[in-house]
Image (cartoon, rainbow, N blue to C red):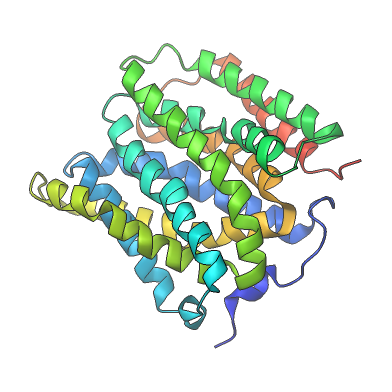
Length: 300
C-alpha cells in the first residue's frame, strides 16, 4: 500500500496561507476532537478515568502500528524530543481530561481546551522564536474573545468545580507546548511514524493508572463503543491529521484548530446532553471561526 504519510510530503514555509488540504485537515481534527469530550463523558458512565485513558491511548497506538510507516526508526538525537512529546501531548493531558470530566461537563471541558493557541503562541515566542504577527496576533485575540463569550453563555450549567477547570487548563498548557515540538519531527519522519511511537510510549506511561482503573470499572456496550471510537479515530488517526497540519503550517497556527473544538463540543452537548445554548454563546462561535480564519492568513 502507498505511504499515507505523503499527506505532509510537500514541505513549504509555515508562513504561507492555508491551502485546501490544510483546511481539510483543520476541519477533520476539529470535528473529531470536538466530539472527544462527549465520548469521554459517555465512557465515564461505566469506566474509571484511568481505564478510559489507557484504552484510548492503547487503541490509538494499535490503529497506527499496523501501518508500515509506524515501524520506521528515529535518529538517536530525536529520541529525547519523542519521549518529551509522549508525556506532554499524551501522558499528562489524556490522563487529566477524564478526571476533569468527573467534575465539569463535556461542553465546559471543550470550551476551556480552546485556550491552546494562547499557550502555543506564548511558548513559541519564549522558546521557539515563533512570535505571532499581524493577522495571526489579531486572530488569537478574536478567537479568545469568542471563547470567553461561549463560556459566559454556558455558565448557567452547574457542576463546574475549580479542580476540574484547573486540570483542563494544565492539560491545555501541555498541548500548547507540545504543538511547538511536533512540527520538526513530523516534517522529518512523517505523521504516522511520530504519532505511532508517541502513542506507544504514552500507553506505557498510562499503564499503572489504567490497571487501577480496570479494577474499578464495569463493562457496558455503549461506553465501550464510545471509548473505542475515541481511541481509534479520536486518538490514532486524529493525531496523524493534527501532526500533518502542524508540519504544514507550523505549531502555533496548527493549534488554532482548537478554536473549532469548543464549537463542536457545544453543539454536541446541546444535542446529546440537553445543554442549553444561549444567544451570546452563538455569537462567540462566530468570533471563534473568524479568529481561525484570520490566524490562517499569510504572516507579514
